[in-house]
Image (cartoon, rainbow, N blue to C red; front, top):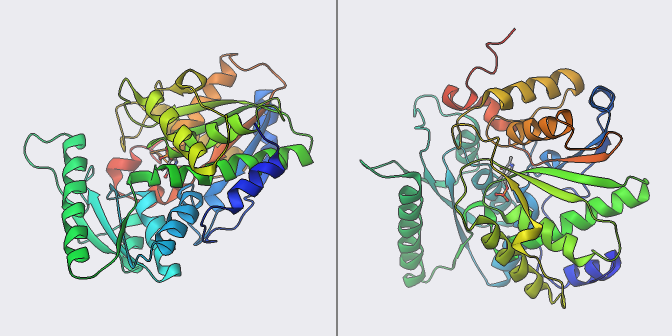
Length: 356
Ligand SMILES: *Cc1c(COP(=O)(O)O)cnc(C)c1O
């Protein structure tokens, strides 16, 4: 257990490369707060930089690529879907640090080579080496992802044999190193809240690989004695295996161990992962998610996305409107980015603009 200052000292001992613009802003959503009867704040990691198209992966990449540079890497491999926000942010970060990005991307939605869109387009602008892994007959998304990791591993081994220095960043940047970025994020949020007398009772965010949640939960465990800590509500953006919470808790504890954080621990039972809002699946739009995108845009001008943040915001709206959150509570929506998906394939966007 530690104070904010003590956690900051632990964080400064970790190799890190400055990439984003921190702290990201925290602002009240006045119109929606009035409509919903809670004090709703947005934590804008969608505006983390480096480019116009930020996102939550940038915090993780500060520590991941800090580690890569310290290890003498020249090439960075990572994974995701063809419209992966993580892969795009990794490519951007690599450009800034003079590293070569190599992306192994699975086509959950098949890209059209004659009309390359959104993150895949940005990956090309960044000059990333892109390998698209398309499904083979009978292959599930899990199989395809596993195959993409094997292909990348083999490629990295070949580079190493030729004297190269590859560094492998897992999908979503979900490693103990990457999760430290969200220990930093949690401390940043709590400092902002403290300075402005905001008493967050709930923090909502979209959870995918679990790295963000692991870091937030680790940060929360670290300063548990200093604050009345909020409940973190993690809205899943895809089906989760039985052991997901345990896996995230392991990741959080590995991040705490790496930080040398003493006896703070995260228990799977501390985590609240809600799988009610992802709809038909990853990269498949949901009616409630698309409603939430329009509602936030039309009340506050803030853009979210159909794959992650729209679904997370739909979860937040439902929790508040169904009375699961007491009126008058201070609620944080952690905007993790992703709005490039608004310019992606129609299979990802669905009927977002068909409604009047
Ligand atoms: C990756 C991502 C998430 C989920 O973060 P994880 O750390 O993978 O759980 C949420 N929102 C957006 C926009 C993302 O790109």
